[in-house]
Image 1 (cartoon, rainbow, N blue to C red):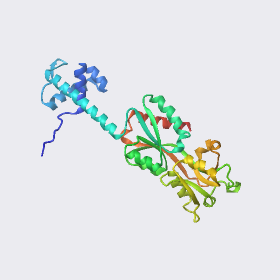
Image 2: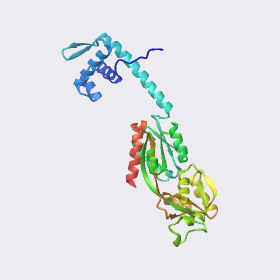
Image 3: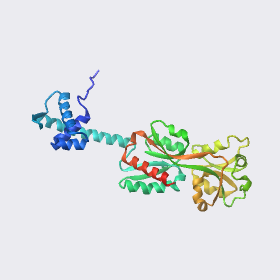
Image 4: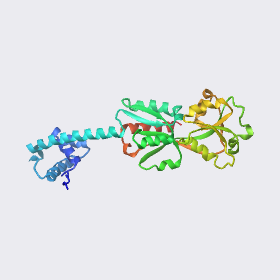
Length: 308
């Protein structure tokens, strides 16, 4: 069985050592490493002790590098470059790039949140492209878990906050509305508003497909009814669904936020009797929490929440 190679000292100590050889100044090293000068002297001494041979000639408080220090310095520089290149390759393989941030979104966010994030993020990170990819909740989670996306913005409730190894931040809260085309002959009258489950059960419904969170919320709403509403068609886009309401006297459940563009969509929004709320969450792996572009995206989302 081959023997295991053990590094006799630490990378942090070698970083201090190489910085000292490069600058020749304990003060410069202390400032660059955010430590005091006594710590620099201590670390340089520990490197010698760890390696088991002299690296410096001491002239009072002054340290003069020996030839052994120069040889070690060259090796440390080469090793540092190799390690940096390896980290960059591993990072690229994981799907995370220094040049772009891939964010998965649900379609409805393109109405309000996405335009704000583009402007706010670009003000912070002009050299990084913010790319959005729309899909269903389930698909976006899968893509992020398989390193296809850096972060996702999706619907959810309190349960989603317990995702393992993920940072989960609530961005906005919203409610749901019953929605029909403005041309529909089947509209709730004043006595039926807010719209209850019984009224919903009597409607011809258009819905999103099963892997969308809005579909799951819809099914939770009608769970208590004995008479289930008839589903006439399923969609993979919230906007395709919205435009299709014009085809007949159909109804659906949509985020109340979309009422801001109700006129453009040709839709009427009616509040639901259910006080069920949901939220939009920003979710990303904890491993990239400290990356500059992730911190910038988090800041933009927090500013949007404060704006609302």
